[in-house]
Image (cartoon, rainbow, N blue to C red; front, side, top):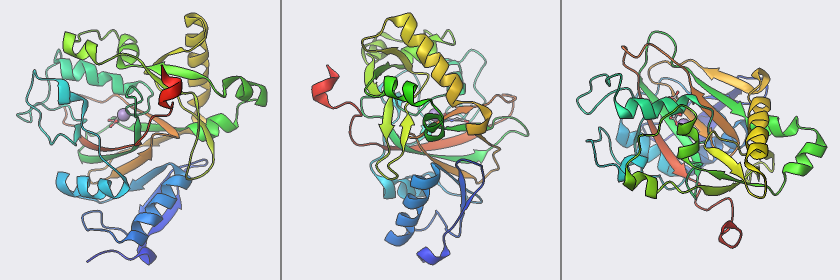
Length: 299
Ligand code: OGA
Ligand code: MN
């Protein structure tokens, strides 16, 4: 059975963005009208919350592919451990391949702590992420929320003079910058070779809504044509502006929730929790398909 578009209900649950979507079963193949209704909802609301979606990895991948090509996970070039999940499933859990909670000093755990910095997924890749879809399979009793910030609202709230100064700027993003912020430097030669900064525009226009947004991420560490301290200070100021509480939604997870967000117009971060408890979250990521800075301007 596929779902008909008439069943999809979209209800905004925050002052500036975020909608709850009901009337759709993500385990089933969807008809084009339903996919279009979800796309329309995410263009408008930037973050969509689906409840009670007990899906398998295969169903999650199939649902996600309605919206474009999936990214493969970063661990594609890490060879020092056995992945728990398919190459198209990012493992956002605190578990190892035996489904045991990661040790305190496990490099995967320490690296993953970087998810608690505000970011946009894969902004450190030349072609960043469009949508991320995160499914909660096991959640701790408390904590472990995910916060989202609306980068369109952040842009709209900037003084016009500041907006004019930002348009056209190109930032450089790498995981080296974000991980350095928490003192994580344990990279292999292999990894370092693949972590050269990539250019990303600082201001984007969303093709589905025409709205402009700030394209920020903790992976950003430089701005082309600007002295480093000046660039870093500007990025810090913008980050603070963009994550003020009025622009932030806190998602408190229940098992079976699936949250889909638009990385072009939002940032997100994980919040802390008792890591003795299992938090099993799995993410599929739809690639944006092309770079934000065209090749002729990238060099
Ligand atoms: C992610 C992410 C935050 C969280 O899945 O991309 O950053 O709360 N997750 O786990
Ligand atoms: Mn993320």
